[in-house]
Length: 404
Image (cartoon, rainbow, N blue to C red; front, side, top):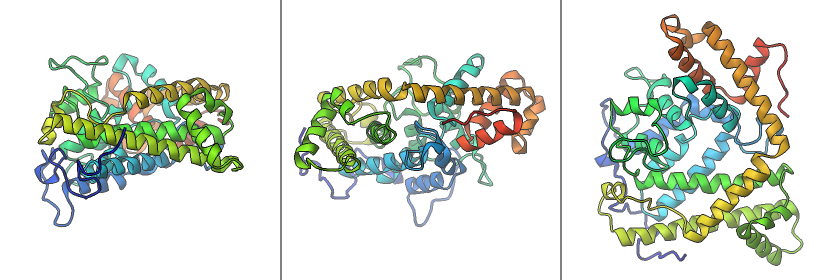
C-alpha cells in the first residue's frame, strides 16, 4: 500500500487528535506532583528504563540461550529494536512517541529466563493456582514487585501506559466481562479492581503500534539469528514467497555480495516493507474512521494499526516457517528441554523451602498458603536472568546442564 504523506501531516511532529495527550492522562493510581520538565509519558518511559527489570533483560533469552554467542538477540536488544520501530510508527502517525516507546520498552518485563520455555514450564507448575502469563507478570512487576519509591510499590505508571501494557494485543474481555481467550489472568483482574483498565476495548494507538512493532522485530530478527546460527539457510527462505522476493531483489542488485551482508540486506528490506505497510494501512483506517480523540480509537471495534491482507499473509507464513524450522529445530528443542528442567527443579526446591530464596522474598513467607507460596516463588523465578537461574541451580543441585 502507498503512504500518503500529505493526508496526515507525515513527519511534521504534530500530535494528532487521535493521539494520547499526556496533559489529559487519566492519571496514576497514586497522585503525584507533575514534573516541571517532562511530560507524564516521558516520566513513564524514564522510570521503565531505570528499573531492575529492564536491566535484567540483558541476560534473558530471546530464542538462543545467552552463552551461545554474543551476537544473538537477548530480551534487551529485542526490546530496544521494538522501541525503535514503535517510535518510527508513532512519529509517522502523529502519536505520542514517548508513550509508544514506553509501552515497547516495558512489554517483555514479565518474561521468564530461557524465553518461552521458562514461561511454559511455570504455567504448567502453576496450573492449580491460575497459571502464568508474561503480560500479567509484567503488570505485577510495574505495579507491585519493583521496590524503588518511598510512597508506593511498583512504578506508579500512568493509566495509558498500564492499559497499553495489558491490552497492546487487543481487548481481553467482551462487554460482559467474559474472557475472549479464556479466563483473564488473576493479576490483571486484581489490578483492575483498583484501577479499571477497560479490558473490553482496544488500547490506544500508541499501544497498537508497539504491538505490531514487536511482530515486525521478532519476525525479522529471529530469521537473522537463525541464519547466523546456521539453523536456517538463505536457500530455505525461498519457501516463503515474501522472503523469496526479498532475496531475489537483493541478489539482482548485489549478485556477488558476501552472505553476512546479504542477510542484512534482506532484513532491512523486510523491516522497511512491513513498517511502510502498517503506516499506509493505519492512515487508510484513520481517514475512514475519522477518530476525534484517543477514546474514539478505543471504541473503533478494530485495530487501526495492522498489516494489509497481503502482509498479514506474509506475517503468518513467516511465523509458520520459524515455528517449523527454528523454534522446533532439534538443537533448540534439546536445549529447551534442559532449560525447562532447570526451572522445574528450582521451583520445587523453593516451594519446599521458601527460605532458600533469601532477601525480601522471604518476608512473611511462613504465613502464606500453598498457592501464595507458589506465586511468591514464581515471582522470584520469573525475575531471574538465564545466568542467575543457572547459577542458583548449580548451588542447589549436583548436575546442571550446559545449555549448549
